[in-house]
Amino acid sequence: MGQNNHIKVGIMGGTFDPIHYGHLATAEAVRYKFNLSRVIFVPSGNPPHKVARAITDKKHRYLMTILATVTNPSFEVSTIELNKEGYTYTVDTMKEFKNLYGENFEFYFITGADAILEILTWRDIDTLLNLCHFVAATRPGFNNKDLDDKLEYIKGKYGKEIFKVEVPSLAISSTDIRRRVAKEEPIKYLLPEAVERYIQKNHLYRE
Ligand code: NAP
Image (cartoon, rainbow, N blue to C red; front, top):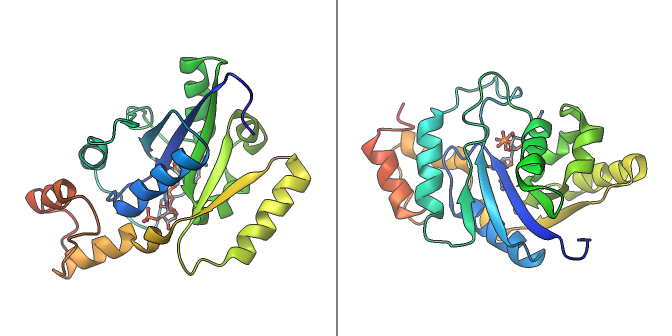
């Protein structure tokens, strides 16, 4: 898997609208499993596939990610995508990380299995698959057959193995949290208290 004397770093890509304990548990589980030196959370900028719903202002998503990760010394947050104008593509993000860190670093891009299912539609996928490893986090009840078929296909066509990690606490979802807030249902214990308070203070996700 990892080459000798390479420093392994996780890149946790997501919209984080809002960040919750499922994301944090995923990052920690993958950090441990792959012996990563740290995990850098990268809130997405303006991904081309997000057309169905308006995403919360990037300033809010960034600050919530900071609040959620601040107590873990192995976690960092990057503004690499948030500072960009126009659409943001993972291939450009990973090229930038490669340039910033140099050849001694090896990257593991971690994201949700639903997103990985669509990876073949991502920009410049041939290049991207050579820039980093990929880890797909599955939530309970996820249809593993579709994912396994896709991963098998990618392995056959590109010779690249995409890792799969099951994360029980990904039963928590951002969509459910947004729905709960809109219906004035509790969200306590689904996400860090500081993030819960931030949502209340800034009146996020209210209809
Ligand atoms: P999404 O469609 O919002 O989320 C897909 C699923 O994955 C959701 O169930 C989501 O749950 C979960 N998920 C998202 N990020 C996760 C994470 N880091 N750990 C665990 N579960 C996660 O996907 P997205 O957030 O927009 O995109 C995911 C990443 O893929 C981003 O970094 C994005 O930039 C990248 N991407 C790149 C391209 C491209 O380069 N063309 C295209 C698509 C996506 P929650 O809703 O609970 O988070």
